[in-house]
Length: 505
Image (tube, rainbow, N blue to C red):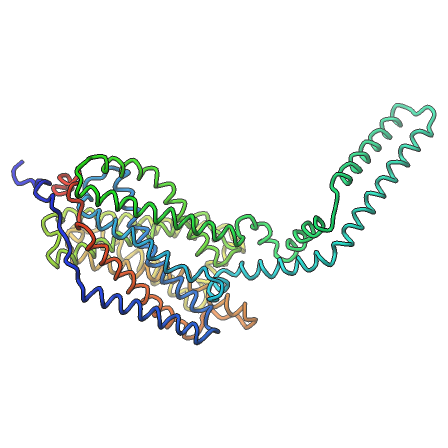
């Protein structure tokens, strides 16, 4: 057993010396871009809709990487994995960036900025439909009450007549008696129903409002329990609390263990991660339902949450590979991260390249095969004009075939620089994937809302996309660097450190 590394020799950890210049550059780029972006928003209010799509794209891209870091942290603990202990702190640092990303997403929730209603059309459409329904209900409430009272009076008269007719028959036959009894019973039930449902003008307005809402926007009426403003905001804050709470709880316990060797921290992380996983999965799934799938409230896919999750897991692992390589080049983690760790991370990247492609194709195949209009329009939009070429080149060839073929080679996964280059490529394709999900909705939605001819793109809007991405990237980079320097770069007193230091696969 000679030559094995002993975790006790690494109990003091390894700390990143703050790269002050790099942090200042990131902060300057992020804050400067933020000021410029929202300054342009105020200067060009007519561009608010296009800029909303740009900001959503940038926030979701970096949020997906943070969510991936959370997933790997939770999976590491829940499966009692030992190999990844030396890179787990990087996962945790990436995971806690969810707070920064969700805070950056808050402008999307503010109606006054003009982003929310341009992105999620159901907000203005629902408000307009409810306004029309309320007006019509006010106009028709008196007639509705009068109609109800007339119906009650009519049914009451029919009941009295039926009773009188029955009483006028001296010796009715059994069949005749049964007929009258059924008729009278039915009329009595109807009278009781109409009498118990006392209709005031207030109740009439409520009933008529639902009726006219159904006529104005049938789909929004059917989905009103989910797609309503109060529920939407409540869900967002639930996602916020769940995701931020999970990330910071696990990071805090992990850092506490660096100075306190009590095994309770290890046990808590394992046990609670198993319980956190369902909340994590639910929060992410419904967040992408509310933010991405609801860009077209008439479209739906039961595979949507899994599709977005696959991209998160794949590309957060790619970012971890890049971070490890950069840190090793800077002189950190050289004694704890080996080529075996790269090999394992490479295999996980390869697995999720395949998983992402499987989910993407399954979603496409099932929707296209069913050929239901409200489902296929998602792909019809993305198969129109240049988006068709974009789909084939970036998603089919770039996102799947190229990394799949390269990562088949075992030696590649043992070459840090080459594996990092593939990770960069995957991140570029993830950029294209998120762009493909969000941006094709912009042209048709905004042009239709303006009453103009349908356009597939908004000329010049790509400049807003680039500015938003650079702004969020700068802020994300600044806070990530701060997190990296906040504690040891690896959990230096984790009970599984020996296993990770000496991992062989």
